[in-house]
Length: 490
Ligand SMILES: C[S@@+](CC[C@H](N)C(=O)[O-])C[C@H]1O[C@@H](n2cnc3c(N)ncnc32)[C@H](O)[C@@H]1O
Image (cartoon, rainbow, N blue to C red; front, side, top):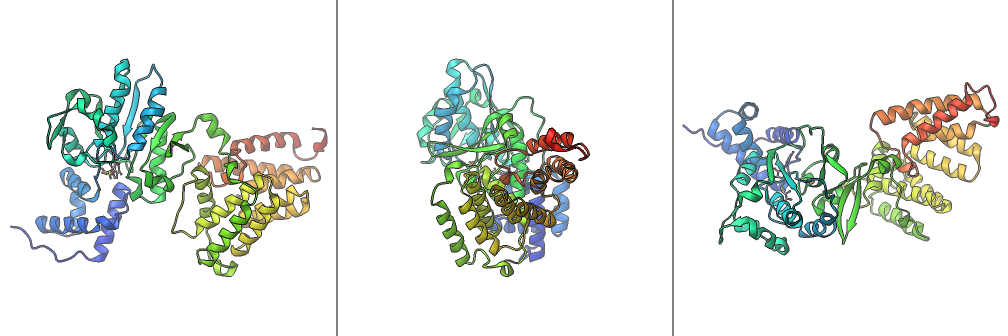
């Protein structure tokens, strides 16, 4: 007998459910989906009896119920050649240059019912099959029910929209039947491998052979920053060097990753996996953004933000500012100039620090100082400001003032190794013993930084990576020895 439908789901239960969805899928349940999920759960509780805890236990032990649940909490909207401009760039600019001897490997990483994977396969068939070239498409998704629908190969009219129509002709040889329903031919189906895969929970296999291009579109938008980062780590790991990653256009500004370079062709943005040399070289700030007069605009921007209360007016009002977060955002923005975090007051600080670094790299020291004064007045005392002041003093050959500032940066944060590095450099002629000790400590901190996979200082490093500084530390440790010898003769 069916139990009565509970009238409502208490708030704590719903929060618990949202937490479960997050840990299982990485998804922050979007507002638009709350009603559906709430209704789904109430219906399941009414059918099965019991409470939320019992239901969560059931999901863990019963694969069929798990699949039903995942189907309810994911959004599976998709259609053929969605965001057709991306497909256009892939076909016109990248497919012709793909290496001749290799099987071209493509991945639709959250394929839902498969329209994206089929679009990729049909486009690749058109580009490569005439020349007898081999290609394959991997189609994965967390939602097994969607994948079952994909397996049937049946498509309704809904899969054909105006966006994408430019390439529908590529599907004609591969869809049988007409009218309202079409069925995928066995030959195109045979080049697509369909496999369940949870991007958030499942480990990626060690890639023996990476993907030339992947699409992970309209999925990360439902996830928080840390989750996106963790998923991108996995996806980046299985791309070939120079491999392409397409995200949904709306998702691009949310994403930055140290191994992925933002590029654009014909106004279409995508990521390209950096080659090893590029990764080693770090990321060079976009010199194009530094132009004469830009500091006025930057200064106006800061004042506008302050005026709109997006940034505190003075140190007292600033309250607690998490400098680590500011640095992380600055690095992310460095990787992706579309990256932004609208709702977080740390983000404007990160933008301004980046702007100061751009000024300094372009030798526009006066502009850098103006902006730094302005920003520093609004922030609590912090290591980045001290470091940047130190850098400006050093550039002006005021070495004592520079040493003082680098020392203050280290007081605020003893592991701020870029400050220690400069402090050592400024110290080595007069105080070699002290400099040797600083280089040794710096070496230790850089190693820990590299081991932790951290990159939070990268936006300060003028395009060099941490290993470059490590090498210099080593060199000076060798030259200075225990600091007894004069460094002059070395
Ligand atoms: C809106 S659809 C996007 C489909 C297709 N990529 C497109 O852009 O048309 C989002 C898909 O992401 C999948 N998804 C959500 N979380 C996932 C996860 N943790 N791992 C794998 N797939 C996930 C959902 O099941 C859903 O099919």
